[in-house]
Image (cartoon, rainbow, N blue to C red; front, side):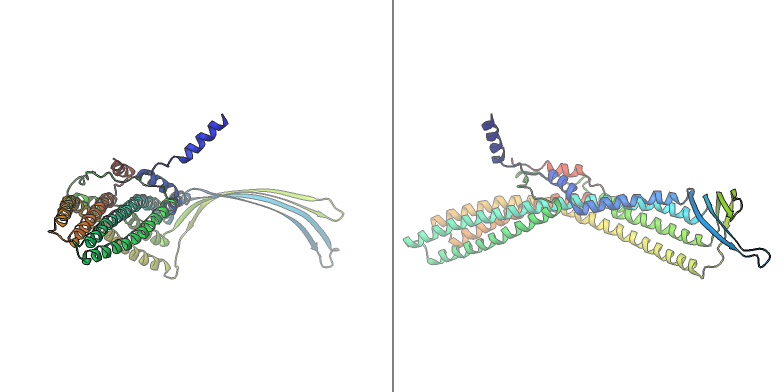
Length: 442
């Protein structure tokens, strides 16, 4: 039984770990990315603005108590001998203040609601940014892996061509020039392989920075993947959505509302305030005279009333604050317009990236077929003597360059599709799931 358990444990560790797909990688990033965690904490902190603003309108109750020992020396100036008195005094009081009219507090409470909306929009933007960052880093790794694989395949093909050139030179059917050309291409491919390996490590490190740990492998994109156009397949609806729903626009809209209420809040520095104030207190005091009987008093006080405060002059500070708030409102209005324009530009750029990317993918797919045919033709021509070695090498380079460009075009088109949804403010995990369904090994 023990041997059987050991065998199962060894078998489990010997099995390769399943490759992580895009959705799994995103969920790991959502749990470990410090940028996203910071945005979530900022959102939670921002939500506290609302109860803090409400607290300014609710009653304020406070209590205090005291106890003290008294020692009093009394000199009657010749009328009677001096006397000494001691005693203890205790007391407590409870006070309640209920704001009845305080325009500054009312404006602060209204501001709090928009500050909460602003913090929610900031977090929403961070959530969308995480999806885009993960997808970008994920496909950057795949693109780098593809580039390395294509370079290695090209190097292997050049190596075969180099060996053939050397054999032909030895038997006298080719010149030394063919060997030198093939050797130069092989050395160049070897240099490119080193650079591609370095680039792959950098791309993996970028993904690890987001996820926290690097998966053993990533699920690739299916070779025959059909990319879908954006829906709707027109640029203006996406621009309109971006101008209205983009999270950066929502952030600036909330900032403008806060700035508008800041003007009213500062103007309230000229307004009176009215509070209802209630107090309840109880004191107990005892005084004793040397050689006489101790005396004590107990007292209870109750009061309720209205407290009106009217500001008369504050040195011009309130007026200055109002002017400052008006300038800040104008700034917020301009920031909102800039956010709308930036969102519209991002939507246009992403839409063109998707539509042009799909056209580029189709063109490169056709170019790949043509490049493969050109390589086959040049190889055949080289064998029968109508093509030279450099023609074959150039055809090989064109084929693998086309493969690399096609791979990158597919990844860029998918990422631009996510960026388009993000610009429109509609990017969710469901969009990532749709892209994830395009991954697989078959």
